[in-house]
Image 1 (tube, rainbow, N blue to C red):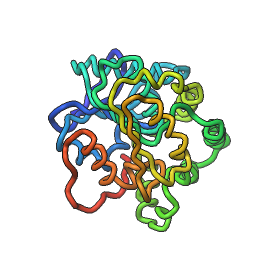
Image 2: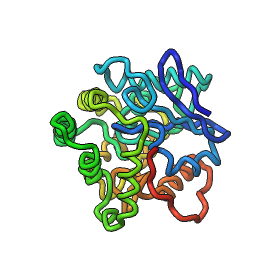
Image 3: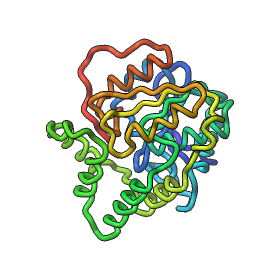
Image 4: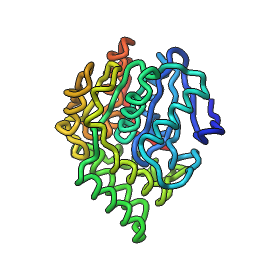
Length: 277
């Protein structure tokens, strides 16, 4: 089921039945980026996926906003759905949003899962994002731009499997709601200003941090302050995965989530290829 929230102007989808599970996407991603694990989680939860402002089918209310504004968007969505409290998964920038939501609205969060994220964005990553933005402004084609991005998202061994990379690039190129260059700039500006390091102790929710062992974008060491400063937090490092754990190792990611949320594990079927549509 899909609808628009008129007040917050967010596109969202509901999948499955059960206790709510809100999933918050990362930089440049929208609700469709969760497809590789959606079917695993929707067997156990009512999964809520949505497009952050500046992505997909959500309206962009100006290009100047912060991570806290995006957290408030998520709260408005929960209000619209009459959901008082929910478990939350936040990926990368979505993890920044989830942190702000948990700090500012602790009563709305059951358990918190932070994938491939940190308390703040490094100076190197801020420069990388600015370069990616400038390349598009300078006329770099979408396909080489996506390929350049992919080097930071996946472990080196993924590039030995051309089916995986080709499926990722093809899906991104065929996505019917691509992010505009201006919207990308709005999100990277919000990321560069984010910093929860001194406020992590305010997070009351039981928290799981999931990191890919080979993540070059946000290495496990940059995520460790989350595990050390959030009072009730554990860290899970996934072998053979980099930044996009839920794309590279969907079953391992889903099993970690289900185990943390006390829901068992997924079946033994083959892992799906990443697909964005």
